[in-house]
Image (cartoon, rainbow, N blue to C red; front, side):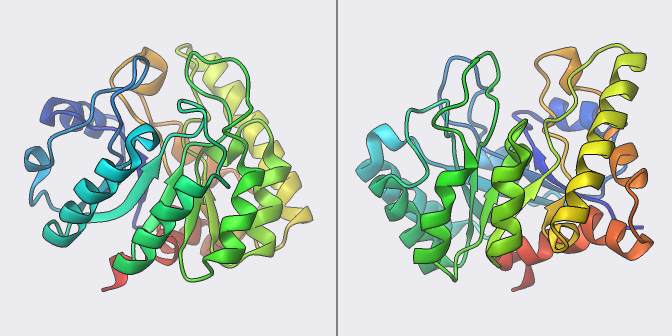
Length: 262
């Protein structure tokens, strides 16, 4: 079975080596960060040039939107590994319906790349305000040919993002970042709780199995994010067909990231 991890954070080749110790994936989307005090540092594109199965993303610091869009456009013109643009809602105080983000969506439309949002809880930041996925709706309507990925299932506000996935062809989400316990027993408890939650929503939203993607949110800061072996358990334990599991583990990612099909 092909496994495609749609959400990783490798800054160095050593990070990638560490990830492969616990991952079964053979394809990966390496998400680029912005400079922020609680995030990993933005990686150098040349570090991962030509690695088999690895795709890259750009990222936008919305505080410097004019300069950032010029820089990102150069990347999109010159680096075929780049398939999406990441926006860090919550880490930056912008809602997804902000006019600055519409400008990012316009650039994404021009280059046929997807737009990824951090959604839901933020690492070391308590309150969910700006990062709530519900504000993506206006973008989904205004830019029907751009695919939007609301990462992390908008944890723990699942209904907001799952309802958007049900309603709009161009909205997707992923299971990444949903496990953070360092103790194996506690991680298994987290897995079972997530499986119960996702199963409940799969009954409520029939299209969800075609919009949900496998991802881990690996990054090498914090022990709870280094071991990604349990993420496969989430998918394997879902009360769905083998075909639907294959979709979550791989096929849906090709639907969400249109540039992969070029």
